[in-house]
Amino acid sequence: MTNPPTRVDGRTARSERTRNAIIDAHLQLIGEGDMRPTADRVAKLAGVSLRALWSHFADMEALMAASGQRVLEQRDASYRPIPADLPLADRIEAFCHQRARLLEEIGPAARASALKEPFSAGLQRYRKLHTSRVRDELTSTFPAEIGSDEELLNALTAASLWPTWATWRDAMGLPVESARAALARMVTALINPAGASATR
Image 1: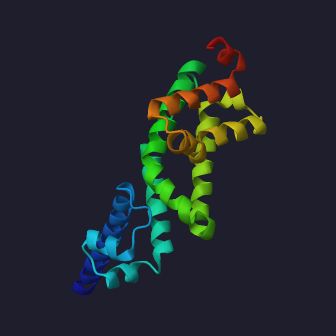
Image 2 (image 1 turned 90 degrees about the vertical axis):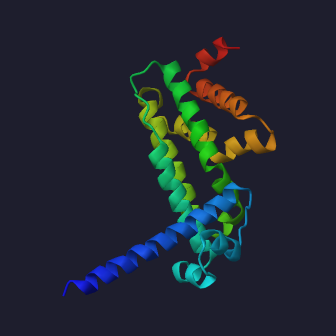
């Protein structure tokens, strides 16, 4: 009576390992610069057959969505709350350093997602989740400064999201430190205009 559940559990564990290996391979290829990895390349890197890949994912959009979920989970695990009772300048510095780190971590997946997001409801959902996470970061880090000012929150959110970071890093070719400094300048100017003027 106890053997069948053991076999089912083992089968389930193997299936989960295969699924994770496929997602890992997909994200590895993207991280190496392959923005549109094919199912064949993913399966070969994962060490599985194409049949196994398609048994876990209906199509490449489903795999991309699963990879998006993994990136979101990794981002959440990597995030560290910033105490709201720190001096404002220290909070801005900590926030911008953390945003730069998180944005660099999700960069490869964000670039790949941008190619397919207009056609994928799943990827659009993950973009909204990332946006929601950033808004939560801002309101928990700068509660007194933002208060109920929705316009300020909207402006800070836009400054802190991937498209702005991609403009600095990709379109303008800025190194990470220069992009981080630009983010800090924007955040400071929005939250504390007098402080931004004093640094000029």
